[in-house]
Structure formats: C-alpha cells, structure tokens
Amino acid sequence: MIAGESSGDQLGAGLMRAIRARVPDAEFEGAAGPAMIAAGCRPLVHAETLAVMGITEVLAHLPRLLRVRRRLYRHFLQHRPDVLIGIDMPDFNLGLESSLRKAGIRTVHYVSPSIWAWRARRVFKVGKAAELVLTLLPFEQPLYAQHGFHAVYVGHPLADRAPRSLDRGALRRGLHLPVEDPLVALLPGSRFTEVERLLPVFLETAQWLANHLPQLRFAMPAASPALSRHIKNQVRMLVPDLPVTVIEGHAQEILGAANAALIASGTATLEAMLWRCPMVVAYRLSAGSYALVKGLGLLRVPHVALPNLLAGREVVPEFLQYRALPLNLGNAILRLLQDARARDAQLQSFAELEQGLRLGANERAAAAVLDLLQQPAATPRARAQSRADGAIS
Image 1 (spheres, rainbow, N blue to C red):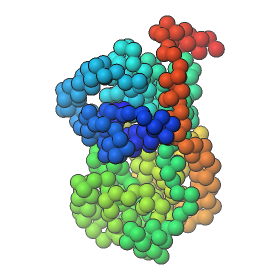
Image 2 (image 1 turned 90 degrees about the vertical axis):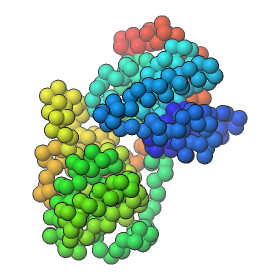
Image 3 (image 1 turned 135 degrees about the horizontal axis):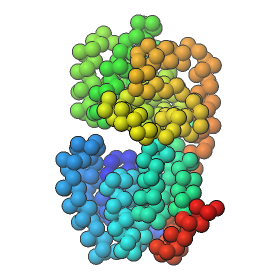
C-alpha cells in the first residue's frame, strides 16, 4: 500500500482493518503514515516523505521522488505482493502501478483523480495502470465503465465517520468558543498558496459581516503551526479588531459548532455538509492558472463545490475568481444567518446527499479488493477487447 498525505494514511488504515477482519493473517507493507503503521503496516517509506504539493515544490523534489519510486518498484519485484494498492497521489502512484502491472502484479488505485472536472483523458491512464479503481463519489464509476475499465463506488469514509447528531453547545465549549453568540467558520484552505489567495478576502468579508451584525463571532482552523502563525499575523495586520479565534486543527468540530461557514472549494465543503453546517463556497486560482483554465476550456463541470456536484444543481452558493468579493460573499452568508428557509433548504439537501455516501466505505473497498484477487488477471488483449466492447455498447 502506498499513501502520502494524511488523508491517504487514514484511508489506508481503514482499508487495512477491513481487509484483516476478513483475512486475519493478511500482511501489509509500503509507504505508510502513523495511522497505517498503527494498523500494522510495515513502513518501507514513511508517507510524509511523499507528501509534496504544488508544481514548483514537486519539481524541486522530483529526483528524490523518482529514486523512492524506483526503490519501491525494485522491492515489489523481488518481494511480489498479492496486490499493490496506490492510495490517491496519482502523479506518484500511477507510474508505479503501471510498471508493476506490466510485471504481472495486481494493482488497485484508491481515490479517482478529478477526471470529471479536468484532464478527462486521465481516465485512460488510470484505467491502464490499475486493474481496479475504487471511487469515493458516485458519478466517477460510470466514467470508467463507459471506457471498459473496472471501477467500484465504495462510498465516502468521511460520511461513515460523520456524527449522526450534533450538540453545538458542547462543541463550542470544547473549543472554548462563545456558546450564545452566532458563529461563522472561516476555512480559506489547508495549503499555504490557497490561504495566501483567499485569506484577505475572507477576512474582509468577515469584517463586513461584523459591521452588519456586531454580535457575530468567527472561528478559523489552521492545518499546521506555520499556517496558524501566518493567519494570526494577517489578522493582526488586516482586521485587528475582528472577533476571530484561530485554532490549530479541529476543522470538523469548528464546522459542527458554527451557524454558517465561508469555505474554499475542496474536501472541506464535503466535511461541512456532513457536519450540517450551511455554507458559502469561494475559490480563486492564480491569474495565470485561471487564464489557462479559461483559455483552454479545461473546466468541464458547471459547479466546483462537492455538494453541488453530488446534487447536480446549486445546493450551496459558490463564487469563483472575480466573483469572490466581500460584498457577494457577505450577503450570501448574511442570508444563511437571517433566512431560515435558505438555511433549512441546504440542511435538507445535505441530509439527502449524505445517505448516498454513507455506505461503509472501508468494508466495501475491502470486499472489492478481495473479490479482485479471486478473479484471474485480465490479459492486455482481454483489456483491449473489454474497452472495445464498452465503446460499442
């Protein structure tokens, strides 16, 4: 199993436990973080050494990453596993999966890249690298099936872990937040580049809201100590009188405690939905990236927020690029705070969408992997014929 970021480490640990529940003597090794190691994975590489984000950052670390991938490739050729499971990290894992599959090792890719949003032709790269793709979102599986690739929708582990009931007062007390005052969560992202682009407009929006509702309070999670320091410095410089509490970690609990949230597009929108927090979504790319996306027509979906993608319609307001302005964002948040119908409409949609995601993802993923191992491996000719048959049908 090969995981990098913390989210992949958590996915891997859950899958390991579910496989071992069915196959008690199963053994695991690979690139693992603390959760996978605690679950019994022998670390050939520590996951944190692979957790590199951003184009320039990846380029700077590329020689080292390629050396690690070659070392893993040689290890698995010498100590052949029953199956290799690459967890997310497509730029690292797909090349390893493809090489090992050609060498006759069964391969699985867990978490589909966002082929539905852009770079649609990656479906072929993923499908050729992995004999089985495990998807977390329901609309992903048909995209593989239509090209003859084997994918199984397993549901989303975040939905399985989400609380079925919330005590907002208890959450606030646990976070040392005011219990009575209305609270807005601000989540400008977990990566430094995202926070740099979105934090100023989020703080300006919060100040606009505070001017309209003086009793309003704000809470903002920080994904790391470095981000926490950066956010606090920006607050002191830009909005020194804003009643905002910066908390390291605890993003989900903050969402559960809040009356509404302003959130950067990403997994956090799914977390807000599952923790029943009405939201407004914003996102900004760099000017160069936005020009490239627009100019080449790379964005292939009408929405970017996950609740909207799941519903196939706008469940939550989203403001992208030049529409992500304090006046637009502030008015949309104000409506959620003051209009019970708008708030209840979101919450009703959240409840309906959650049911389609809460399927027992770990167990379904384990069943799909073990079922794959009971089937004969498809030959290249059979794979090509399967894709042709899929295209004909």
